Length: 216
Image (cartoon, rainbow, N blue to C red; front, side, top):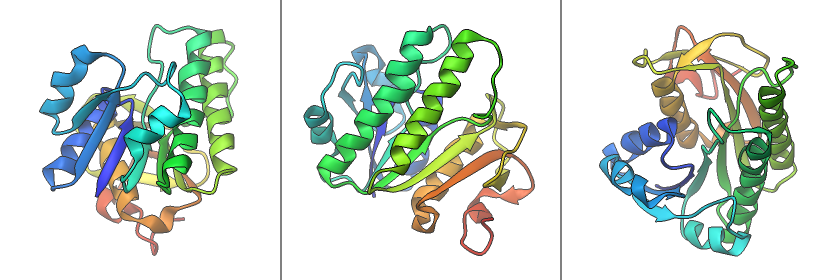
């Protein structure tokens, strides 16, 4: 399997790259800073310079040509303001989905966020939640084999290998390592197409969490 990852230098993206390339899959990681190439290569992926805030659909589609799946794992990140929540968490996701359609890459996994129904009163965080909602709404209109993953509060602690998965809201936290493992499991289970999953730590082994007989 060849997977192209948008936001290829993010913490979850690097973990996904290690898992995929460790089992023999190929990963192309789109990054906007050439200083990040060494980190991407250390994770086993091939870096490609691509700024999703500046690129057009044709350019991004060129990076996806011939791939088996696309993963949107980009985010504006801590310290960014309202404007970048929109240009990265919404607009870049929309651009990447359009590029996948143009390139004929139908399998598409998008990392979103849990708790999208909240209004916190924090202008920047609420802009982030609104951007993630809008990106999801756009993706659901597309003729892609999409799956949306909504992790809870992200932790840098070691992964446990077990999670709780639901298609209704969950409240809790989850290590980034377990999110990465869940992404790989979703890529391995095309039966999850057209579904949105909430994800937090829990008792179900990730290897079984997305099997058709166990998903909600």
